[in-house]
Amino acid sequence: MNQDDKRLAEAERERTRLQNLNVKLIQEISLAQKNKINVVAEIRRKAENDIHEFERKADRDIEKLEHDQKRLENLLRSNNITIMNLEREMENKRRTNQQ
Image 1 (cartoon, rainbow, N blue to C red):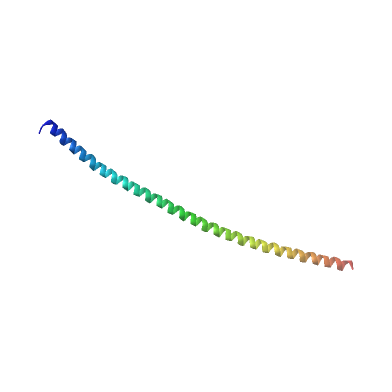
Image 2 (spheres, rainbow, N blue to C red):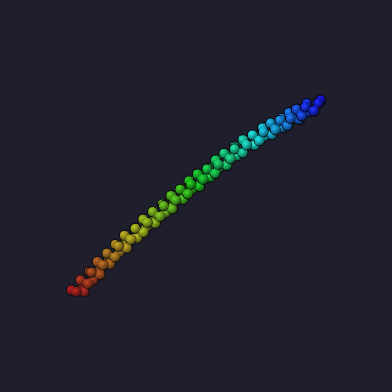
């Protein structure tokens, strides 16, 4: 085997090695892309769950605030009725005392 044949055989081995390396690199790139897609999907899923949980908590907080508001409105109404009754009673006593 002459020198040219040796160089040609070496070049062929190097080409084959590089082609095999390229196949492995393509597989790794594909795996990395799949992993990236899975990570993005997981992040989106977690974000959606967080949003839903936040919405549920906000709904509960709103319901509690509405309940508190109704309770305070009822208390205000009750206080106003008590004030009116006391004023009426005081007016009646004034009238009675004036007579």
